[in-house]
Amino acid sequence: MTTTRKEQAAGTEAALKQAAREVFAERGYLNTKITDITVAAGRATGSFYNHFTGKEELLEALLVDMLATADDQVMTDLTHEADFSRIESVRWHVTAFWRFYRAHLPEMIAIKQAAMADPELGQRLQRIMAADDAHLIGHLSELPQPQPDPMLQLSAMNALLEGFAYTWLVVNPPTGRTITDDVAIDLLTNLLHHGLAGGR
Image: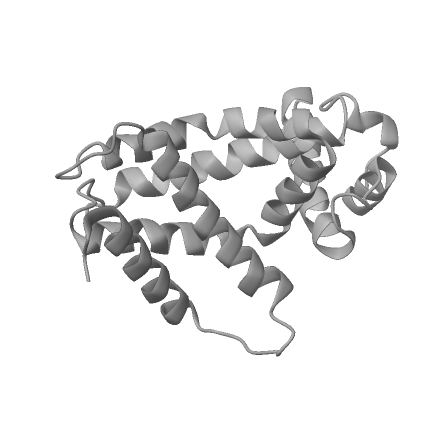
């Protein structure tokens, strides 16, 4: 059975994305060259530019794919609820974030490195995540005493989650200590619920 050009192109794009993920994990985003990606994908360098204008656009495409997969999971999970006054709702979102970060560790590190090296790219990546931010702002607006500017709450929430995940899943404290996913999720859930709803 022969493959069409469209199928071949889709296969090449998928191979480049997977190769990028692997090379990012091995070398880091900043140290990765386009030729590193094409070699790992087993594709000619010229084929890269049939799909992406550069490494930055490839990273943006990876982020779009990741968020689309996460959205599909949210839509099929009937336990997802919006009431952040309930600790179970906060726990659901913290758990989803922690698992997402762990599952996409190479991409999450790449996004952080890319945003630090190129603030304009960082802003584009933030715009891609705008729909997720709007989703969470909707949750924050349902608190019994919603704040006048939920974007500030969301910013603090994201900083806590991302900073904690980066510290424990990427950097690891110099003591060499590790923590389990359950410990991380419990701690973050309790901090956020107390901060958002005054929960204990």
